[in-house]
Length: 469
Image 1: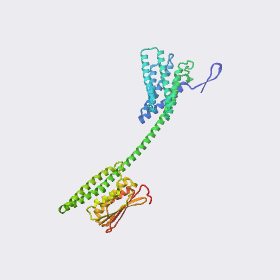
Image 2: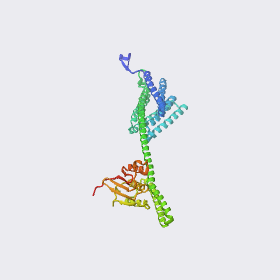
Image 3: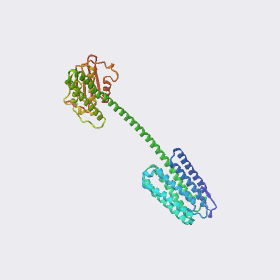
Image 4: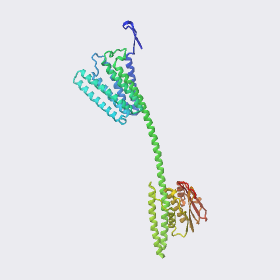
């Protein structure tokens, strides 16, 4: 604060800091903000930063040229065409900056269209003022065009502000405050030109210079926009982290799908081994039998060949079932007990072993999912096939019993038996049986010893508890 003495009537008057000092301070602030924007552009390569820096530079240059114009005795607003062009370029950059900062095109299409109209209106007005200057039109007319155009642009900006305010975004708050300060500074600077009692251009009182109001408004606006850009960078960083999190989730989901796909492949491989392998093995045995029967038992050979055909059709049907099991549709329920009998009789058609069945009248298949039924049936076929190929049994028993919380299926024979510890991985399909039991969360029990036969029991948990009668 400076005291000025020697005023009329001997009173002391307060005056502000000198206009030149204030202008130097504000120019320094704007220059630092422009430098910050340039460094941000070099680091992040976003167009919003170089447009922001160029806007600040244009406004700072405009203020310097205005100072030179104010020193002229014939100064009028908009009389200097160079100032008009640089100022218009700054306003155009301001509109582009506003569109990019708040993504107005996406968030508020009407405001975006209005800002685009203001952009092209300013372009047209600048071209008109250039033509008027080139045609040596009196400066009063050019001043009128300039003032009307600037007031219309200010009105458009004030119309956009309340619409943007409804976006309820944090970045918008800084833009609104900055825009209001910018518009208010421009309007006050423009009005001051037409109020002679205030437009004194007293170096000891910066408030008597129109540029002061405009530069103060731009400085506050730049500070607000800088805070808004910092917040926007924060949001961008959060979005990047969220994107990385989503990528990690997607990666884990892809891993899960890959695991599921591998499981499907393993299931298909087991199906081909347990289901088709057993049927194809049966066809091989029947072919050998038919070959032996052709010489002395032609009628029996024909029956065997018909059985081979039926078995081949069974293989074809089984293949369709395997393909169908890969679909999401649930197959229709069948008489599970009948399938167990039919499968055993078909496999042991030409085997001297005698079959014995102990099956419930009403199997609990309704309490088993379609997948559980299929897996249990395939395990049953594999157990029968092992007994047929390896047991050399005289009797084979099939026993099915359901308990309150599980259903248990047992295939037992009185064959040669074996030592489980001597069987390598995958021997006799045991690895496949164990894998299917694990997938079903079932238990597989093997009771065997050399010369004492073999009993395989699988217990599958039911969907719900069966209450005893």
